[in-house]
Amino acid sequence: MLNRFIFFLLILNFFLIDSIQSQNTKKATKFYLEGNSHYSVGDFDSAIEFFLKSLKSDPDFCPSIYKLGLSYKRKNLFQNYKNMFLAYNDKICEENKDDVNYHLGEIFFLSGEMNTAKHFFDSVSDTLKFMSLKKYKNNILYNIQNSDIQEIVYDKYSSINKWLYQYSPSFDKKSKTLYFTIREGGNLFDDENIITSSLQKKEFIDFKPYYFLNTQNNEGSPTISDDGNLMVYTSCKMDFKKNSCDLFYLEKVNGIWAKPKKLDQNINSSYWDSQPFIYKDKLFFVSNRPGGKGGRDIYYSKINNDGSFTNAVNFDIVNTSYEEVSPSYFEDIFYFSSNNESSYGGYDIYLLDNYSNKPITNLGSSINSHLDETSINLWDDYILLTKEDRLNQINKSEILFGQITRPYKKASKKITFKTFDNETKEEIVSNLFLIKGDEKIKISNEVSYNMELFSDSEILAESKGYFPQLIKEINKDTNSIYLDRLDKKIVTRNIYFEFDSYSLNNDSKKFLSIISDWLITNTFKSIEIAGHTDDIGSKEYNYELSLKRAKSVFDFLLKKNPTIKNLIYKGYGSSIPIKSNYIGPDNRRIEFKITY
Image 1 (cartoon, rainbow, N blue to C red):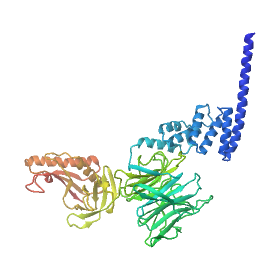
Image 2: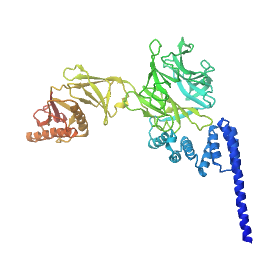
Image 3: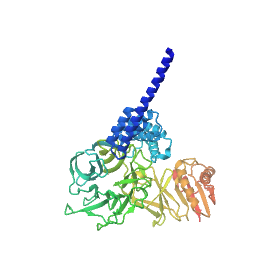
Image 4: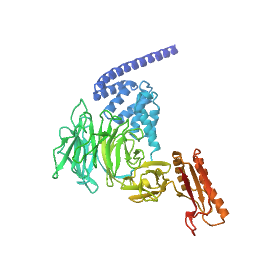
C-alpha cells in the first residue's frame, strides 16, 4: 500500500514539474515575442528588458539568449554580447549555432585572441553563409605567419583621443600645424569637423575647431601642399539619399586663404569623393565612382602650372577588388590602407616603392594589427597613425603620434646610367636590368632610386651588337657602362680563376647564367670560348689548364641550356697574355669570339 502511495506521489510530482515548466516556457515565449517586436523596430532597450524577463521565466530559453546577445551588440555592450553568446554555446541550443560561433569568432578576433577566434570560426558548419568567414581565417593565418615582419618601427609618444572618433591627420611642416577630422557621435551622419593643433616639443597642444572651413555640413580630410599655398579638403552634405561628398580647394593670396571653391568635374563625380592628399604636382583622392576595381579606389590628377587639375585617373597599380583608402606619400614612397586578404585584420597600411619594382608591401606588425589601421602620415622622423577599434566604447578611432626608431625605406636621389661603346666612347642605347639574387628587374636609364635597392645588387647592360656587361659598383650619381662590340675578341671581366685552378666560383656561375639566357635570345654563326693562363709553369701544362678552363665554361653553359648551338671551346695556354711580364689574375681569363 505504501509503495503504491509513493508511486502516486512521484507521478503527481512529475506532472506538476512538467506543468510548471510548460507554464514557464509559455511565459518565456510571451516575453520573447514582445521583446522581438521591439527589436524589429530598433528599440533595443525595451527588447533587452523583455528578453531578460523571458530568461527569468526560463533560463534555458534559447531564442531569448540569442536575441538578447544581438541586442547587446546593437547597443555596443560588447562584453554582455560575448557573455550571452558563450552562454548560448553552453546550452543545448542548435538553431542559431553557426551564427553564434561566427559572432564569437569575430569578437575574439577583434580582441586579438587569435587561437580562440580560430576555434569558433572552425566550428561554423555552413561556411558559405558568412561572406567574411574566409577573410577572417586568412587574417588569422597571416597573423601567425607574419608576426615578426616590421617595415617601420616607431616609439609612441602619445595619442590624440579626445573625441569618440578622430582620424585623417595631415601635418603642415611649414606652420607645424596638425589638421585632422573628428566626429563626436557614433552615427554615420553625425557632424564631422576639422580640428587644428600645434606641435611643441613632441607634443600636440591647443586643439581648436577650424572655424574657417567648418560649416553645418561635414568637413574633413584636409591636405596642404609643400609650399603651404594650396589646401584641398572634403565637404559632405547631410543627404540620406545619395553619396554627397566632394572635394574643395583654396589658395593663399598674399599669405591669406581665399574663399574655398569646389573642384570641377575633372575631380568630383556624382558619387563619394574624399580623402585628398597633395604630393608635389599630384592630387590623390578616394572615390566609389563606377569603373573602379573595388568598392572604393584611389585616383590621382596632375596639378598644372596654372593651378588647374587634369582629369582624374584610376591608380590601378594599387587598387584591388577590396577597398583602398587614405593615400599619402613620403620620400617618393606611396602609402595607403586596404582591407585585402593579406592583412593582419581589417584595414592595414601598405607601401608601394615606385622605384624598386617590388610588389606592394604590408608595413608589418609594428604598424598593423588585428584592428583597423586606416591612415598614415609621415614627415621627417615622425609618424601619425589612425587606428580604429570597434569594441572600444570611449575612442573608436584614435590618432597615434610617434617617432620612427630605425631607418625606413627611402626612394632617394636621382641616379643616371649611361652606356658607351668601349672603343669609340660614343653613347649607345641599351637595356638595363637590376640583378638581385635570382631576380632580373628591368629599370630605366635615368630615374630616382632608393640606394638601399642597389645594396647586394648589380646592373646588367645589354645592347644589340654588343656583349652584355655586369656592373657591381653602383655608388655614383652618374654611372658609366662600357660595352664591347661583338666583332672583336671579348674579355669577360666577370670570369676569373684562382691560381692553378679551372673551377668556376659563384660569381662566375652567376654571370654565365646571364650569358646563357642571352644566348637563347640571340643566334650566332659561331661562339668560341677561349681559355688563357698566366706564364707560370710549362707551356704544355698551361695549355692543358687553359683548355680545362674553357671546357668548364662550355660545360656550364650547355648544362644550363642544352639548346645553345655553334658553341666550341679552345685552350691557348700562356701564348696570348693581356699583360707581359705580369703575374696576376688578368691573364687567367676567358675570352669569347663571336661570329654573327
